[in-house]
Length: 259
Image (cartoon, rainbow, N blue to C red; front, side, top):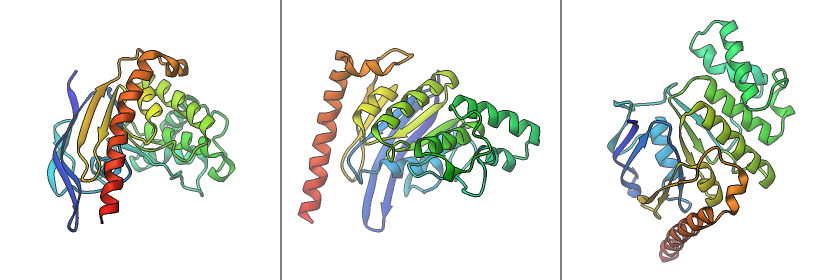
């Protein structure tokens, strides 16, 4: 199976600050890559560059062999904040990208209802975002991203604002959708348990200026059940990644104290 995404020598400077040093990453079709690292290490910057929402100061990003020059429907983005349009119903939020693409209304509705069913929101199509819990709003955001048929899903701490129980349910929901849909996913998180449970690969970034320090494949079979979090294999990988992240968090703190 070939690579869908190539990040080659990507660097990002903000004035005199080097936020992301020359970074290389190859992402295979259907990979679910989770990205860990201390605050300010460039995780979200890298994701935004892949999304076309930010521009690298060196290097290039290729999606299916074509250089990314800006945002596109081939990449679906889900943020931590609930980025729904409050004046649109759940159904019309999910249809938004389909309207932009000019699809016939009947086709829009078929696709939207299909993905609302997959995220467990059948029957909520006429609700408005303010009538939904945080977890339900994020389900709508995921359905909207998937409905547009992207080549990749880019997720920036999508469950970071949710309570622990809701977060775990959302992890299982998204993993189930990924196992069924086989989308390629880049998923930024601060949560090591989440990174191991969700990912087919876990990438750890160093303290600023960020670079990829570790890249580990997660050899836990699918479908995954939350009970894998208590297995020795899970614990061993979590221990290695915890140590890797801890070293970088301490390095980031030391750098801040030295300023």
